[in-house]
Amino acid sequence: MLRAMDSAVSGLRAHQNKLDVIGHNIANVNTVGYKSQSYTFKDTMYQSANASTNGTASSGGVNAAQYGYGSLMGTISIDMAASTPTYVGGFSATIDGNGFFVTKATKTEKVSTTGIAGTDVNNIKKADFDYTRVGQFKVDSNGYIVDGNGNFVYGYQNTAANDPANKPTTKQMVALRIPQTVSSAAGTYPTYADDADPTHALECSSIKINKAGNIEATLTYEEGGEKKSGVFTIGTVAIVTFQNQEGLTKDGSNYYKASESDNTGTCSADIPGANRASLMPGYLEASNVDMAVEFSEMIMAERGFQANSKIITVSDEILSDLINMKR
Image (cartoon, rainbow, N blue to C red; front, side, top):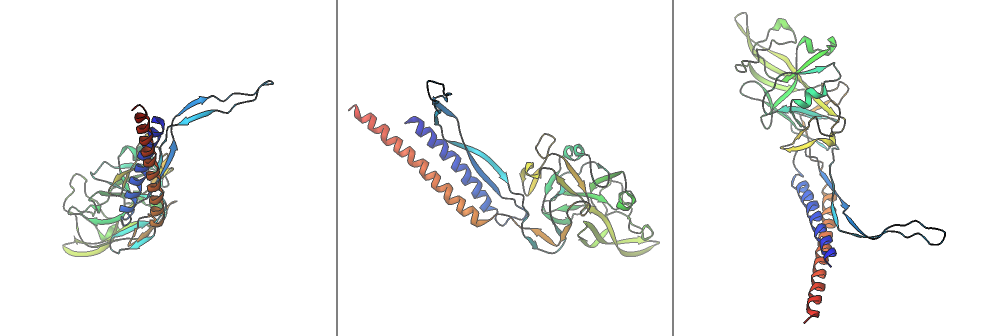
């Protein structure tokens, strides 16, 4: 009877874990950018009463006879399928395909990228970035482009060295920001301030992002003693893709983490539309939780939990009968 009770206890734990995953999915049904998780079971260790033996000329073969000890968690996988984009307007964008925006809570050094269509994998993973599908951007008090949680948004400053038309051999991915000075004579390339002084960015009256990831801002500046206003492209957000995006680790607040030792494989960073997905300006990606699936899975998990609890009840009654036989 103890073997049956042990199996039932493992079944209760496994089904409780499944209910935890389902509950988390349902709780995030309206969380933008959330990717649902699915839970599977696996059977656990066995005790062999009879081993499997080969047949001979004088005797037939015998199959193994084994007792199982219940179930365990098999996998908890992430469904990375894109969900329905929801229009919210403003300085927002969603990725129309695979990929993640690159953010970080603290500003890091420039990350070198090799070639227009690729990057050094180790440079990205060593930088300890936070990756997100939620492109809800704003400008902070120092002129940096940040996301809804205040993390710096990374991309490529709009400089001649990063211009795809020039086919640079090296690009620098940095925390994007409003420049301190611009010049109308510089054309589309603003002059950026020294990173050692992150204050005193130019006044920005409006800002937007297009499907190519270019951030265009209306800036007020002085030139020749006159106060002028003009539209400048200050940079382009970066999109990072992974060979195995399901290998990313969830880190809360719509962020994912990657490391050199994880199962994400090769990754690369580039601008939207350059061998990767473009953006949908003004949209945010909704949660991909399917409530019909979650409720049906919840019913099945609840029934499994009840069945395992019934095994414990029956085992307890049989043990009680055995004890009462002595009286």
